[in-house]
Length: 392
Picture (cartoon, rainbow, N blue to C red):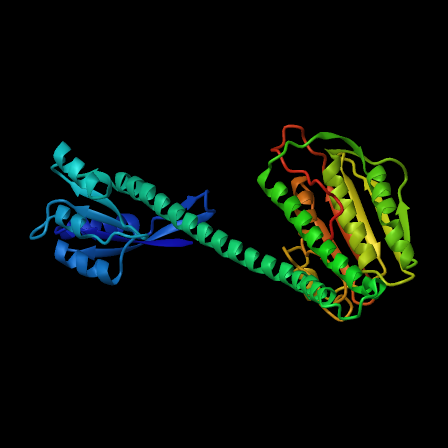
């Protein structure tokens, strides 16, 4: 419920009372903000009194009579504070003229209401002004939220890049100073660690590009029948060498082809991220089970289950956020961008589905997602140039 303060400035008590009666219980629904709007009414019998009240408790909407004793309505309009929270003024006059309208408009009047007016006419004018006020407030709130999110995004991005850059810089200093002597082979470990850090930064950059393309819609999607079994098979093959190093079994459970109208690259991103995470956060000698089933509406359900380190409820709650990385004794040596799962969630949402995680610490995690077929006329989304992303 949004309650707006409305001030009626009129020297006639009957007029002020009539506005009170018409608006005090008046409510309307504003679909654009999904909220009800109501009003709190303040009265002023003169322009001087109105300015005093405006200084202490500025209204959102000012119903201002043009003809007042002492200061006129135009005098009040000229003295109103100007700023971000501008007051929308509806001039009330029984002596409307082109000159008055032009002057009042130049001073910032939003609308005019000629006397005498009916309660319905009053409500119409106030509703129009109130809608503008509420939408303007929401726009300011949204702009501030975007500014805050952008600042936080840059802050976290700087933090994520700072650590690997500092590590590489330190190793280069050691190499430059020949700390371990002149034998080249003694520096192999430093070089390997530097390459690992560079790979970490490369993954972060690729994931950032993926996310940017998803949100900006900069490339038209190529919607065609895609067999998710083929996508999963390719993803498993991509992860096989990494899994074999730790003796992790990769299993695919399907009853046959599962074809869905989709963009192949987007499906690659989803499966590559989920299967990569299942390997990366698994235990040695563990297993990863990928299951795909068709649904009756031309869509599909998929799940990726691992026997890994698992997560607490608190960790699960923040898992799909940007730069969300689970930090504990099990994960401190695991590198990742923290963007992969947020990218997966965005893509699943584009396909009208959802993604959930069920996890138990030291037992494992299961990610389950649903996908509906895409329509060729859907709004363009992005593709990533590299689908091999990491989530955390």
